[in-house]
Length: 124
Length: 124
DNA sequence: ATGAGATATTCCTTGACGGGAATATGTCGC
DNA sequence: GCGACATATTCCCGTCAAGGAATATCTCAT
Image (cartoon, rainbow over all chains, first blue to last red; front, side):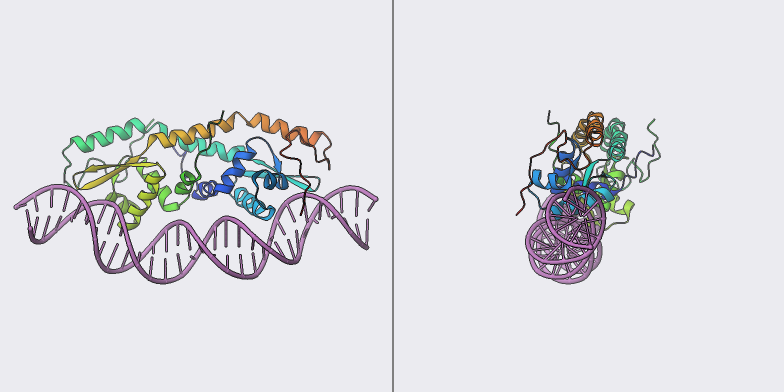
């Protein structure tokens, strides 16, 4: 339970192509802003802006090194996304079952169907 | 190796609050458009539009039932996101090690670090 | 202190996106 | 076929976010 309520901004941050590229690049290890810009063919200011968004979404973390700022992925946030996803996997059977029941119960036109809005079915 | 290359539109679709709410709702089971709109307090046209985006992102699948259209989550796409995330988890140690080496190597200003992206100092 | 390097921030413009309202499309019952 | 229901689509509008360019900020070396 609970595993959910993951904020939309987290996904929105990953939903921007340039930002997703940055994240994929950072998978290979921490990088300074200039290196990221150079590696991806982006301009430095845009990279800084994207990193800001990623940082606000809790996806990256900055570590000042000398006069450079090294960014790295924030493990915790990715773990949270993982938890969120795992909460789905346990539901696939339930979901299919519900659909089956809906279809089988002759719900051809009946406005009321066997799956009430808020379903308290706990999937242990 | 590249378990990745997950498309940004997939995340972008989840990055919209209303759409994320729809996804969370569909976790409880398949629903018809009108039911979704009613459950979330949204208007039917907007729900249809959001479902379209989610469908194009491969996150939901539609099943016509009578004159209603029942949407459900598409397991495959969520599994792909899961795979993408898992490819990160194996990198955490590597990442930390790289950062540690960078910091410990007295890289107070030395531009050399264990993961050379490209060696640029070129500035226009 | 001064200058250079590295990064962050601001201003601007433009294109995309979401919501509202109205309407088109499609499906069923009769 | 016709009308009622369910959903999809279109048009309009306001907002927001991303890229470009210029500049401010911060840190280090001398």
